[in-house]
Amino acid sequence: MGAKFCAQELEEFTVVLHHHGTLMLTLCVLILAFSVVAILGNLLVIRALRKASSIPVTLKKMFLSLVVSDLAMGLFAQPTFGVTFALMLQTKASGNQNYDKFCPLAFTLCHFSLFLLACASLLNVTIVAFDRLLAISLHLRYQQIVTPNRVNIALVCLWLTSGAAASIYILLPNHNDRVSEVLEYVGLFITTVAYSYIYKTVRYHQNQIQNQNGALPDQAMEVHREQKSSFNVLFIYVVFLVCNLPNLFCALLGEADRFRMSSLVANHVTVFLVLLNSSLNPIIYCWRYREIREIVRSTVKKACPFT
Image (cartoon, rainbow, N blue to C red):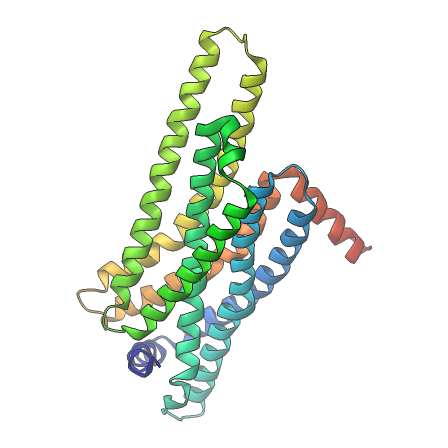
């Protein structure tokens, strides 16, 4: 499976390797270094989320799904890319120009794991944004409609969809860029629309409370709590955009000539940004959620008494 895909990706990588070996070595070191950060950071966040009591159960499940995808990125996708890059650089240094041994297993595994987990992250970010929109719009009805069992079903469908999309990406090498672009466009469009409605809804409720001269303190507290929760999740979405949009733009520019050197170099640099996203999310959780930050700090102190 994926022999044609692998041959195509190997050809692109070989071109970059021969002209920008130093760049590829730098990316290799950075990818392997940040994989350690992603593993340790997301393991700490998983433990903190399981113990946190201030985060609603349904939202906690969605966060755990996102953190698991980030952890898997650090455990599988990043090391696979880093080790493959290192072995190919070693092969080049030895004077051997035959990279066929990396096909089809190594390259197919690299790109399948990356696309699967990147797709899962995109869908997780999307479902979290949609959840926050429902929380602000439905208020008391939210708990009746968004139940833990329904969230579980949605998350299972999310991971199955990611696996199917990754398989299509590998099996259709001539159209894999379009598969990636369509998924990213749809996911980012839905998420952006959700946050636009969240902003409008929050503004409406704030104006309503102000017009009533603070007569409904409970409602004011509820609006403030949901606004803060949506604002925290917004940071995850913004970082996801910063890390993933360059790769999307690069794919669009590469449609004209995918073997142009500038496009190939930009593609590999932006793939690193996609991988980096899994190392940045734990920092956001600790920054925006006080309880998670305190649990992580307590865990690190117990593990490292000298800190």
